[in-house]
Length: 242
Image (tube, rainbow, N blue to C red; front, side, top):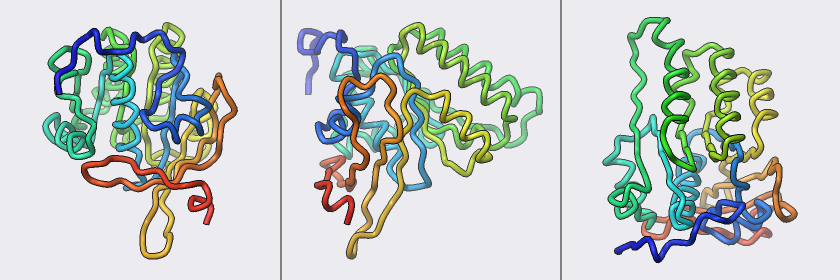
């Protein structure tokens, strides 16, 4: 696939499409730009794939994306996205996407840990990207103080006020419930993912808890599977509620 700038949709839309009409419909048309989005879910609930889907949708709109990953190397992330038909190699070559692999150190000084979120916030604000994706915060917040995480979220909220759109994923057990409630309230968009058994198969279920500034009415539930060489396959709402 060869991409030319003339083929891209100019980033004038007020929303970011997830690249799947069924998901956009539940989001009230898509993710409003300049939003702070929290994607919450247990392991293997589909958080990373959903963010990769949104990343691909943003790139197709002509938006510049910075993707921070704590769970992949650059090579493994590209391989995973290619296997799901989220081809981003050409966007990387055009400079429209940058990938930063972060590896939290096990034996670090407490002072270094305390400054890590400050460094990350500075790096995110410094780069000229319209969309920032961090997948995931789980490995970062496990050893951080709540005040450091809250300050980081507030810094990202200020970035959104300046026009950036920021996405995070996190395991709900990475933070105490009272802290998680506070972080949810700060976010403009809150999405929750979990898995459910349907017959002999496991389905991913996306619950749309909040979309502040949605252009249309939002839905509640999206049921999907992740299939190689296809990506996200959405099922009818009746099956999601079965």
